[in-house]
Image 1 (cartoon, rainbow, N blue to C red):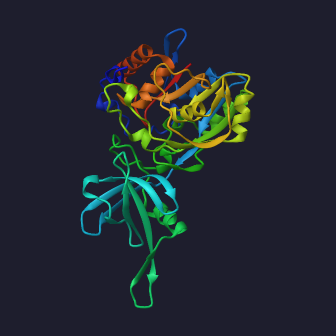
Image 2 (tube, rainbow, N blue to C red; image 1 turned 90 degrees about the vertical axis):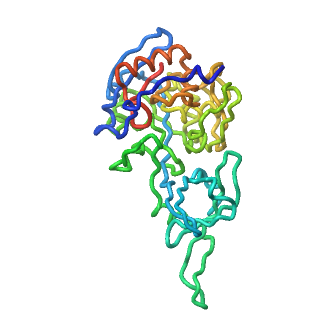
Image 3 (cartoon, one colour; image 1 turned 120 degrees about the vertical axis):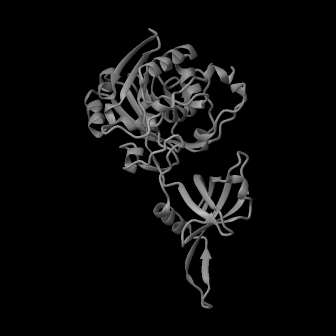
Length: 351
């Protein structure tokens, strides 16, 4: 299929710049795939669409303060977005301005923290080797060495939670860019379909006889990388780390009802671990799964997601789940009714 099939005009004023005061007061578009119908609700009403015996699956990744602002030791400001820790003290990152940061460049982010660019990645990123300054040596000069624990401590202190580039307002409370169940640190972007849930809403869902299970997929460069090929088949996904715990596998494999998946990241994790219909393996691995029209879903029965950017792998995935034409119809209706789009925007339930 051609990428232009997944393009649409997104009015800039519909890109949500901040979260609503109450998480669960966002709007909820309910799209029935079999009846080809569209209904409009608020997210607080979400539990009424669940059934006893369903399993609600959430991604419990937590966004790390992965945005580092600094400068080259030779001068010039730089910004680094940490994507994945390769090993203690060594990170894959996107660095701006990239063309001015060749291998061998030394970057300073704090009085105690610096990094050397030791390699480039195929996608144009950089491999950064971090060093921490610790006191002075006997001759009175500063000592710098790789500290496996010290690096993470300083990054947590001086780093900022990264927001997507289309959000131009600083978030007043950084926790609003985290889900209320975020637990496993490692993402550079939030699994935004989960931002609508509150502790009270989750308790209501449990009280209905719906089981809640968690997976972890750390959102990385695969989310940021745009599709640049005219034919979507030629796009290649980067890998992202994910985990399906034993407990979650048991809950899914014994489910009496539907598997209700919150977010495209959760869907990628579950489908990557599939070994049969409604059967997954417990696993810690990396996935480069690219879901596009023609894909046969093995685990996900219902998908909860936000409204995505044009020409994105996320829009391609939801089109694979609900059908290209139905998604086009839903998006045009969302635009006409002035739904809020992208990370802090409204939600869609595809059932």
